[in-house]
Image (tube, rainbow, N blue to C red):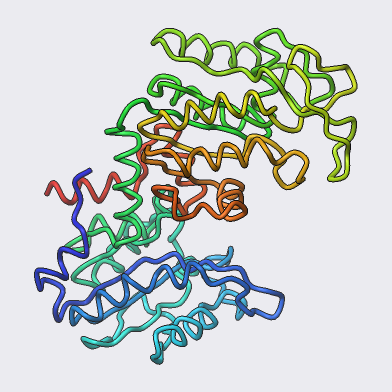
Length: 397
């Protein structure tokens, strides 16, 4: 992907003395008293902010927080707690500016936080008049919020249309590079793992990937539907029988280019869905009517692990079993360890996937961990994200 990198603008001296508007993702969880309970996104935004300050820019940063009603400010919607925490981490005072759309006073070397951008009327609908006002505030726009890259809003898309220069910050640039490496120019074989409870929520992803990947591993409730499509019994396991035709179509699409969707040969079952349920390993052909399939079995895990270790590129979205329950976590752990040991470039995304990566401590062994849930899924669906589209368009002049 061809786009302007903010790091290049800073390195070349083009950001010195310029007004830089950074759209960050500072949408952090808070308790009922407004205290921040987890600050990963704030910490992740610092390199871009520091880069701008070190380059001698006058720096403005904004983000959405929660789900405010446009034009109706409530104290709970304020970015003040975020500015306070960011200030503590950066060792500086960061003033919060309200009603900033019509003008901001900021000097080179100064950093100010612009109040919750979702409070601006017309933000979500990407109102042109608002977008032009935002663009007028800066000389350089920096998009560094991958979590919002799938939304065309005034502070993410509109401003990028009209700002004198539109660039990608280090977080967004890393996502764009990783996605391009994994999907646009993958080292083969390309193996994708798509797991979750329902085929319906991942059907477009499965269809899009089936045309491009060399191996498509399905897991969780999705695998149960594929087992049904392959003529296997799944007992009372979670599945979507009305989507058997779609599952069969994905299997056929893979076969058409010499690839496959591996169907589990053994599974781990239980009679009840509970952490203390008795786990039983059995052949996939021997599932009983009152069985729940809660994980893939050791034989299937070993086969998939071998496939992953031989891959050139791995895309991972979703655990293959109920990994929160220890007795049904071995499949997901086996997959995670195989990805960690593989020489393939791996990209992983999705909340449950990130939880599994953290549980098995393999963060350093995954090539790239995507931070944007919805945006990552839309990329897997084959969609061009609005943020990517406008930044590439602006780079092309």
